[in-house]
Amino acid sequence: MSTMTCIQGQMLEVTVVGCQKLKDTEWFSRQDPYVVLEYSGTRHRTRTCTDGGKKAVFQEKFMFTLLEGLRDLKVGVWNSNTLSTDDFIGNATIQLQKVLSQGYDDCTWTLQTKTGRFAGEVRLILHYAGAKKQNYGSAPSAPPYGPQVPQYSAPPAPSPYSSPPYSGPSPYPQVQYSQPQSAYPPASAYPPQPSAYPPPPSTSAYPPAPSAYPPGPSAYPPGPSAYPPPPPSSTYPPQPSPYYPQGPYPGQYPPPPY
Image (cartoon, rainbow, N blue to C red):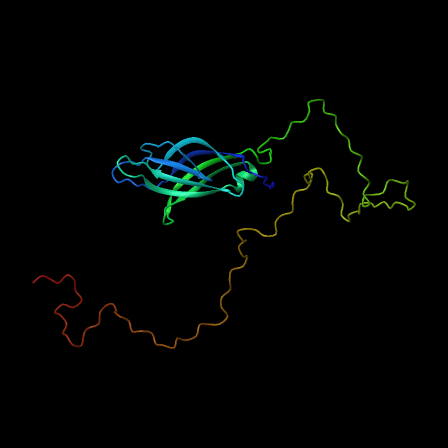
């Protein structure tokens, strides 16, 4: 940051850009704001922005003669009235340290009411030519036009970890390793040839051959039954019943005619 020099008698340029978010002091119509600047007893007033309402645009420039030891600027915003006194909207105190040291300041300042409440914002652009000149936003200069000569650098130094250069044949004999031989004959590259003899008959046949000998009779007779045989259910011819007499013509069919 550059050191501020003596400002006595130097000129300060102030541009009032505009206001926004202003407190509305009118009930039925739009307010007509204007801005008042004050420094070291010098006052400047912008034009009235008729029907500006809460947002007013001015774009007006003013010049102030600086005084050594006074490094702030007073700003006040008012609402212009025709039949009554003007209404106070808000004010702010602008610090000049930045513009006096750098030569330029573009900021938006907050306005406050008499009770310290928010009353809107005002934007000012400040210029001071007496500050040490600096190259703000200057682009770097382009290189001079001409053929570009390639620059070659020296070859890199050999690394201590790289392999040593070839110094001749090795004094030790080189061992030649042969491929181990398999115990099995190598597989033939040709398909197998068909056999000249028919294959042997199969040991098992289906269905099985019948037995040459029938099964023999059992060597042991069947044992007697443990239970008596059941009585016959009926006999033929039927036996005469002991309870009922026989008919007149037993055993004859058909019966003789009467």
